[in-house]
Image (cartoon, rainbow, N blue to C red):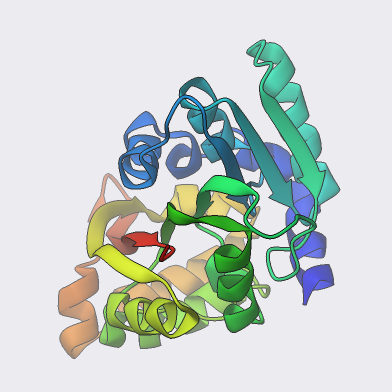
Amino acid sequence: MPDDVRSRFAPVAANYARATFHTSSERLREVLDLARPQPTDLALDVATGTGNTALALAPFVSRVVGVDLTREMLDQAVRVTAERSIANADWVLGDACKLPFADESFDVYTVRAAPHHFHNFDAFLSEALRVLKPGRHAAFVDCAPPPEARDLMHDVEVRRDPSHVRSLTVPEWTERLESAGFEVEVAQSRELDWDFDDWMGNMAVPPGLAAQLAEVIEAAEGDARRQLHPVRRDGKLWHAYWHCLIRARKPE
């Protein structure tokens, strides 16, 4: 539910303005490569959080709109926008599953590291298709582990952040997008070496709970363990983490 997301992210909004994954120039370049923004485009970044993706788009489009459920997250986006003297970004309070925009309003649609929070996934995809202009592209980036690791990590995800709903695999993403009416042009998985402590810190997970969740990952067996390959380096836990990188087109 939207209130679940707001209650979880409002207190930690400042963390996401500086989070390693969310602010990484390499990770942001992935979105730009998928979205293919043009100088005359009006872009929409959904579940923008503190605006990292929207602000990465800003130099390459005419204007970008970032929409998010959580006022505190948008407050951080406004602050960063002012600090960087960016003049072509707007911030709107709104729900990815019920966007406050007219049909076919945007040339580019992006969403990153958020759909696993959406309770009505079909409505989210329907809204993405609705607001995008025919013939234009949407970029979808979200956590997308292989099935065995996903089943084990689901418990970790929900205990870390109760607003987590479910991570889809890349084939599941493709099926859902095509059912919604998109033409999927690129759909791949990308694995990262994941800093467990940094991940816990983003959501301010208490140390005791973080230790329990680390135990779950380190106790993984079989295919899940082979996929996660957890390891301690200088006492810190690292493990695999995956995202889908998807470009989809709205038919003309």
